[in-house]
Amino acid sequence: MKNKKIIYWSIVVALAGFLFGFDTVVISGADKQLQQLWGSSDLYHGLVVMSSALWGTVIGAIFGAIPTNILGRKKTLVLIGVLFFLSAVGTAFANDAVVFSIFRFLGGLGIGASTIAAPTYVSEIAPAKDRGKLVALYQFNIVFGILIAFLSNYLLQDIGENSWRWMLGVQSAPALIYTLLVFGIPESPRWIFEYKKDREKAIAILKQVNSDEEVASEIAAMENEKQHEVLDESIFMKKYRKPLLLAFFIALFNQFSGINAFLYYAPRIFELAGLEKSASFFSSIGIGVVNLIFTLIGISLIDKYGRKTLMYLGSVGYVISLGLVTMAFYFEWKGMAVPLFFFLFIASHAVGQGSVIWVFISELFPNKLRAAGTSFGTSVHWVLAALIPSFIPFLFKEIGATTVFSIFCLMMVWQLLWVFFKMPETRGRTLEELSESLSTQSELNRNQNNFKVEQNEFI
Image 1 (tube, one colour):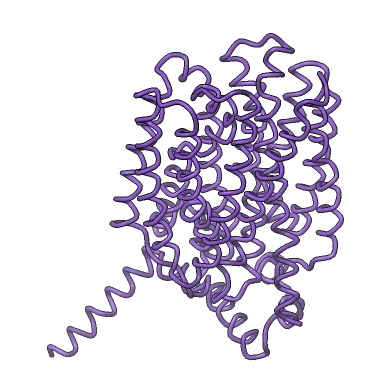
Image 2 (tube, one colour):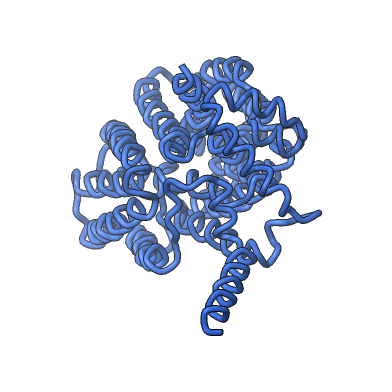
C-alpha cells in the first residue's frame, strides 16, 4: 500500500510533464498556418508567435522557486494547472498575434514553474533507491505529451481553416483533470519540515510511504542538515559552486543538442528534407513514438546503471545522429533519410539527457536551497530553449540547415567530454548525503580531517 501511494503521488505530479510536453509541441502543427494567417515575417513569427510560450517559460523558471518555497510545492502545482487551462482556452479563441502570444506566455509560465515544482516534490518524497525512476516519470509524461500532441495535430490538420484552434484548445481537458487530481496529494514532508517547521506533520506524511526505521533515519538526516545551515544561505555562495556549475552545464548541453529547436519545427524540417506536408506530420508522430519507447528504457535503467552511464550513451548517440543529419542536408539526401536520422537523435536524447536532466538537477542542492538551485538550472535550460528555437527559421534561411546541425553536433562532442571529466554519479544516495558531498566546504572539512589523521599517524 505504501509503495502504491508514493507511485500514485508521483504519477499525479508527473502529469504536469504531460501538459509541458503537449504545450511545447502542439504549436508545431499550427506553425505555418499562423504565419500565413497573420502575415508575420520569419523573425517576428519565430521570436513572438512561436516563442512566446518559451519566454513565459524563462520567467516561470527564474521566479518559480518563489511560490514553490513560499506557497509550498502542492499549491504551486495547482497554480500550474490553472495556467495551462487558461492558456489552452485563450489561444483557441485568440483573433490576433498579440492576444495569442499573451495566452501562450501564460502556458509558458506553467511549464517553467513545473520544471521546478514537480521534480522537487517527487525527489523529496521518493526513497533514494527509487528516486531516479520516480522523478523520471516527469520526463516520461513530457514525451507522452509530445507524442499525443503530434498525434492530435495529425488528426486535426484537415478539419478546416480553424484547425489550429482545435489543436491548441484540446489541452484544456487534461489541464483541468490534472488540477483536480493535485488537490488529493499531500504536501512535501521536507518542505513542511524546512519551511513550516512542523516536525510531527512531516513525520505523519513520511509514515504513509516509509517504515518507522526509514522515517527516523530521514528525519535525523534533515535535522542534521538543518543544524549546519547558515542564515541567508544562497546557491551563489562559494561552497555551492560545484552543484551550481553542474546544473548550469547539464542544462546548457541539453539545449545545444538542438532538441527544442527540432521539436518546435519538426514538420518544417521534414519539408526542407523533401517530404510532403502529410508525410512530415506523420513522421512527427514517429518522433513521438521513438521518444516514448526510449524514455521508458532510460527510466528502467537510471537507478540500475546510474545517471552518468545514460549520459555516455546519449552523448555518443547525439554525435552520430547529428553528424548523419548534417551530412544528409549537405549532400541533399531526400526521402526518409532525415527522419530516420532524427529517430536515432530522439532515441539518444530520450535515453540520455531526457531521462537524466530533471532527476540530476533536483538532486544537487540541500533541502533549503533545492527549489532555488533547481530554478537556476531550469532557467539556464529555458533561456536557451527560448533563444535557440526563436532564431531557427531565420538561421535556416541565412546560414542553412547544414551549418545549424553541424554546430549542434560539435556541442555534443563537448558534452561527452564534460560527462567524462566533470559529472559525478548520484545514484542510490540520499539527498542529504549528496548535498554534503557536493559542497566545497564539506570537501574542505574532509580534506582537513584526512590531513589530521595522517599527521597523527606520522607522529
